[in-house]
Image (cartoon, rainbow over the protein chains, first blue to last red):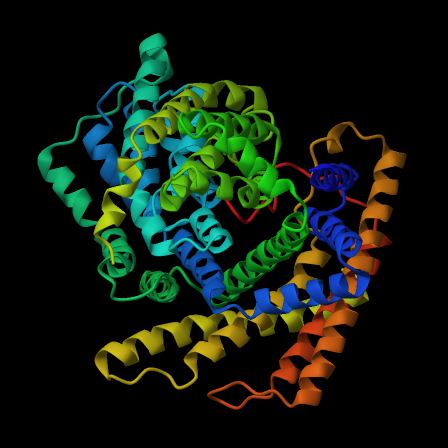
Length: 430
Length: 166
């Protein structure tokens, strides 16, 4: 146990010295392994881990989903989604903010990144909200929070990473995200309702649209529906694996972007390079985390944690509740990807030993990441929104996300209390 | 942009973009071929693996030169200038050490694969070539970190060029 804790402390010290996370984890993992086994073994281990992670077929799902998301962002499908949601919800109090949430949910169905979703809707839905006199707290809060639906509604980068780390079926994880994603959308809309109930001037209603306009607007989102049904439907029905689904999705998104003339040569090349850069960044930190985990697995820490957790055998929900609290607290200050790469290898064996479903725990992890992304002081979505909407102060965004944070914590409680919400749909898969 | 950037960035960028596009095409052709023509791509599996490895490693120097590695930057705004420069120097030096060491170990691994004459199962590609490329690109990443070390550090603006995972 002591060795494991010392390793974690060394990692934190390096990280706060501003050593990139990937190197900080790798160094501690290397020297820890060398201390436990031998220097030669440690040197062989890091080369082995790096080489094999690079050549792992299942990991090809990562660049392909990233590429799909980047094409989707360029294909301007977000505007149609927002317009369609607006025709249904715009006339309500806070309706434009609810439209943002619902459009984000739709966008999340074809894009696996929370940051990309938040960035896209900062551009798409902030201008209309401003036009109708929405207060910045509500506008910024709804965009930052809506963005997090990108990782809960499949496809999802976080689910892919969790699936790879724990060897859980990525297709099942995707399907498990659908129902919680719908509940999350409703809860976030409720948060909008609450904010405008407290302060009706924060979100005045827009114009009412007739049914003809609504149907017309719905027709324009067919591309989003087609892509979602093709990729997620194909995975659910077992036509192809998650890897193949990712490739097909990227190909489909490429075709749509091309057909809409949204892809001049320069943009096309930039999208490809951007996707490679994101992939490399991710793999770097993934390799670092795997090296670190190789060391941790040689210490007594995982077994000790498991023994400790098994004392709660009769009340397993207490262990789960404790883990959730730890995550919510960590998420306020930590970068979320590093947080899960570091902690999932420790918590996963504990949770499965208590008899919980790995797929369900994956959804729990995604929700705590969502909460972390909009928790001050360090929440990536908050920063993204603040950066793109320069005239809004960071304090305004902080205040804006709080009600949404409460809504997501409620979602976490619901999914913990009723695991069936996550496990029902994947139960039908082979 | 320094001379190092001009020599590395456009070339690697073009290679990376081409690899990424090939990977997408390969997957699509493989699935379509399997369902409609009953004929998947020969060696598609191992081609995907090799493309993946190549594109990850080709991207590493690019990420490094942009200073995009994920870092704890919570205190950037309040760190005094001298400490910030010191942190930058130490952190990049450590990074260069890590990647340099890893490049060397990968080289040894490539040599081992070459000595055993290992090839991929379907296409018979000599895998050592790929391992050598991985090692060289890792060494290039180490060199890039040395170049970055001599640059004035940029304070990180939260939300810019940000995290991939979420």
